[in-house]
Length: 380
Image (cartoon, rainbow, N blue to C red; front, side):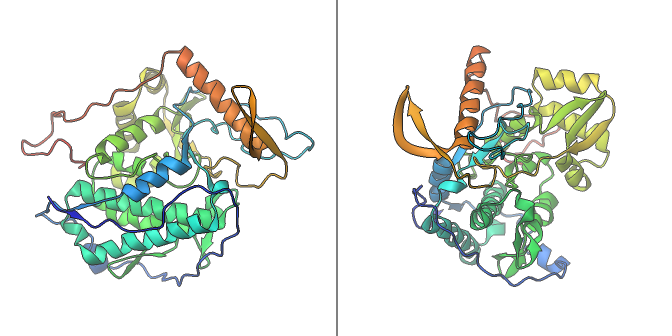
């Protein structure tokens, strides 16, 4: 089983300097993708055993992504203003202790430039190998990683910014901007999700691989996707999202769910209420199962567009020393970030107190509707 040469990029290491980076300029093609263009990305019926090595991106994720831990289904209270000012810096969202955060404020110009280089390397990989002839899991990992690399790249270029949807690339909103080129075809992040993955994979679990840069969306995993772990990471992402306030909650007897389920409805949830309930039940823990059982109609109205970083997309002018075991260190971070990390630590102590210190993921199991020749590790 040959391993293809991994895309090469400069090492993605955190650096202390925070430098402004000029965003690249991209020409935009507003014409809809043709059926012939879309057919280019249809998975082959005769997959090979080639693989792509994402170890560089894996290392980057472990360095720049911080987990806020599983949801306790308790909205975070509004934080106090930073000391010495009436202005509110940092995150104020009631969902701020859910999901994962990217350390954008710690990235210097060389690191940010390496994101662009790595994204281009992934694009060029499709000129070296036939992506469509890889195994379905290998293809899925490629598309998810490319999408997420591109999102991290563009948000890092634009940071500080409060909400990723404010970013424009070539005058076009980030999610619609076709700055990604694969096999000569310009694609947007939304094209990758909807016109490639949602079109050719029938399991809605694929939704949870795509990072939107927002607190209200699925988490960015702290490891790169690959053919061997893509099923496990998607299940982890589904459980994290479904069992969080940003995924589902009750209001007035209704089951509120994320607006992302409405967005994905044409692909996965044609009978919206019944299909979404069945989907949520697949990943629900006891609390969420009880919530599903006692609520009436579904309202896809949960949103949170604030950036999934540590500072709320704003540079705070005041800083605070960090202490470790009661001893001050020389590392200084904004007061709002220090407050958020203290809230995170308090939450982790509560998780430990409740005995929620691990998860069990089942894989390689046969479901009643599975065909006899189905690869049990394959995401459909």
